[in-house]
Length: 192
Image (cartoon, rainbow, N blue to C red; front, side):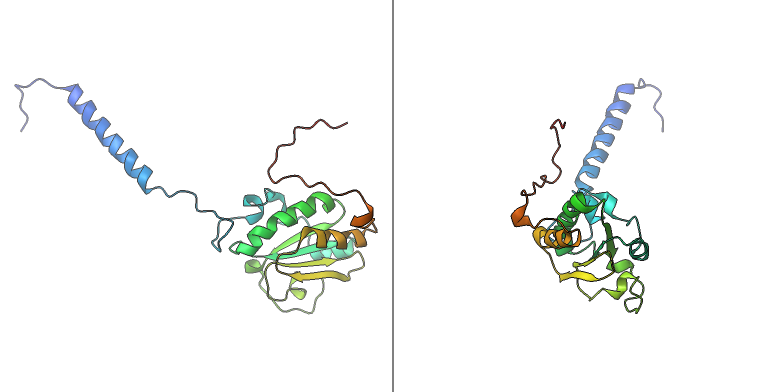
């Protein structure tokens, strides 16, 4: 029952409302999980190329393997899973390779989870080259010949040496050493 003899107190209402809002804030703060993305586990975190390689432009691929072969361009197929520790760690190598060869070769990352047909006799489809492992790296030259087919994490230098052969570039031992940028480094140099 409403007591009309006591004066109405806005101060009590505001203090009660403020205490309620503070309690809700702390409950939300405690209940909200921290970021769970980790390079060293097999959990799904999202697009591994955007998260770990700093290069979201790799997925989805700009061209299909069929288009790349039709245009007589080298193609680097990278079979991966977004929830694989090895693929997460290898994504930085793929991004660094794209930095050097992305204008002259087609980079085609293939998410194995998205593949519908694992067996095919059509060499213009990525499934033709897939051997059941991730990561798997396949480099196909301008003539459509497989020049590199490696399972697991492959060193940047190994793929780079194969690209150098494909493009008829000087071997690493005879050329100036490549300087790779540190991942997510801000380039503040002035270039002439």
